[in-house]
Every structure is written in structure tokens, then in C-alpha cells.
Length: 408
Image (cartoon, rainbow, N blue to C red):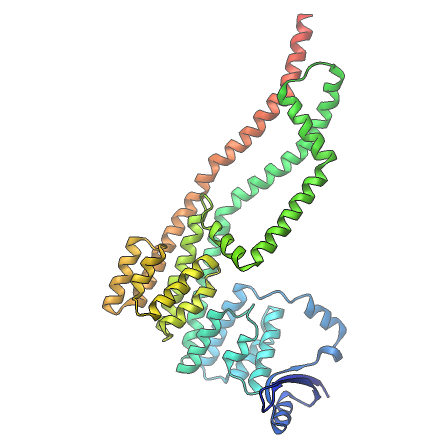
């Protein structure tokens, strides 16, 4: 008989937990109810499970991919539309998903549903897999009885997010390869090429040109004291990560990302497109504006923009309109603000928000196509600079030596 671990609250609201043997989770729930304990979580104890299966489960705890979540939403849409009960639908998908972590989370959700929780509470136990936006949309679907519509809308939303990431990866692939190649070339030059030439120059016993002395000094530093630079870089990376983990550091870092030359404006438009699309989706589903803004502020994945969105929610709560609060953030262009104002006055805010999202998507597409053209001159300058340094530092003394030999 399997052993189950449980968590719950007694009649006084105090949290209780423990373990109990039972043939299935329903028996645990009934036993806890008889003891006047409200079950919150019932999960099978893994101590008695197969060791290899447990090790494999622990090594596959990474969150599911966007593709896995899109497939899950589409399958849930088909099953709920066909009238399949939620528990049965989740049980079926928990055995067929390609993601190990998603299968486990769906099994946990089935157990939570069997213990008396609703689908929103069951999915909300795994925030790394199901975002606040995802969970709140499911809550709307449960409350309105339109769960299948919510799942198909979530699949479309996730699909658009995936396409945006693909466009970014395609635009940055070529510059990334060039930067990596340059880094490798600089390493080979410092560790192998320059030391070989330095031994030749040492036999000349002649005054070397300044570029050559600089190259030899940098090569010697990289070979003999390079570990100091590596430690400093590692320490700086760790300190930066710790600073970003703080609230003010997270805010400043997200703000800095939007001000990076060439790519900062692209990031900003992507975030604003995500905000507009998410707000349109939640308003269409019947979520109040203030609650929608509070949820989306956590879903845009940028604390700087999230703070501005929460400020919008506070101003709307005091009686301001969406268009005025959007103007006060300073993030939207005049054209977008005009579209929001028209949508608010005509009662077509959801449609206008979708138009705003499409507007930003088109701008992002154009900027991504131009990104390679803008970065290419910088990469060519970097390559030319390396060639120039090598020409001056390596070949100039050889050229001088050849001239001396010809005059003698």
C-alpha cells in the first residue's frame, strides 16, 4: 500500500502535515476530513519508489518548454470542448507529455483536484511552469464556464511568444558567431602566435616598435597573470548576480537592458507588445482592468516596465482612465496613445490593444531585420582592428629587420 504525505489546516487554521498509508488519495482526503483537517496537498511519498526513477525525476526538474505548454493548452482545449472531465483529461495528458516535469506537475494537479481543490489552485502550486497570467486566465475560465476558450487563447498567446523568441535568435545568430570567432582568434593570438614571434624578436636584440611591445606585454599578462583576470571576472559576475537578485538591483538591471544601444529599443517594444496582447486577452475574458494590470505586471518579465504597469493600476483605481495613465508612464508613442484613447471612448479597447500589439510586432520585425545591417559595420571594424594590430605589432619589426639587412 503506498504512503502519502499530506498538508492541511485544522479547525483553528493551524498548518498540519504528516504521512499516511492508503490505497488512493481519496481515502487520505476522507480520513483527514473525518479528523476535521482541511487537506491542501496530498502527494505520494517517493521514498518507496524505484531509485533509478527517482534519480531520473530529480535530473529532469527543468521547467517544460514553450512548445510543451502550447501542446498542453491545445490538448486541453480539445478535451474540454469534447466534454471530458478535467481530472480525466489531466490524467491522460500526465502520461503522454514529452516533458518529465510537466508530467509530474499534472500528476500533482490530479491529486490536488481529487483532494477537493479547483484547477486554479492545482496549477498555481507550480509557478515556474504556470505563470500568474496562465493561472489567472484559468481562474477566469473556471468562473465563467469557458475553460476551453481560455486554453485555446493561451495556446495562441504562447505561440506568439515563441515566434518572437525565434525571430530574436535568428537576428542575433550571425553576430554571436562572429563575436565567438573573434574571441577564439584573440585567445589563439595571445597564447600561441605572439609568444612564437616574441622568441624571434628576442634574438634580434633590437629596439622593438611600440605596437610590438604592447602585444608582447598583453600576451605575457594573459599567459602568466591571466588567472587573476579570470578570477576578477568571475567575482564581478557573482556580485552582479547577487545585486540583480535584490529588488533595487533587479529594477536597475531591467531598466539598463532597455537602454542598451541598438537592442534596447527592441526589448522595450517586445515588452510593450506582450503587455498590450496580454491585457487584451484578459479584458476579453472578463478580468477587471485593475486585476489584469496587476497580473500582467508580473508577466512582462521586466521589473522596470512592471513597476510602470502597477502605477497605471493604482491611478486607474483612483479614477483615471487607461489612456491618461498610459500617457503618464512615458513608454507609449503618441500613435499608440491615440489608439488607446479611441478604443476607450468607443468601447473597443480589446480590439485596439490587439492593434497596438500588432503595431509593436511589426516594428520589432523591422528592427530585427535591420539589426544585422547595423551590427555588421561594428564587427568589420573589430576584425579590421585586430588585423591592423597584428600587422603593426608582428610584421613591422620583421619589415624593419629586412630593411636593415638590405642596407648591409
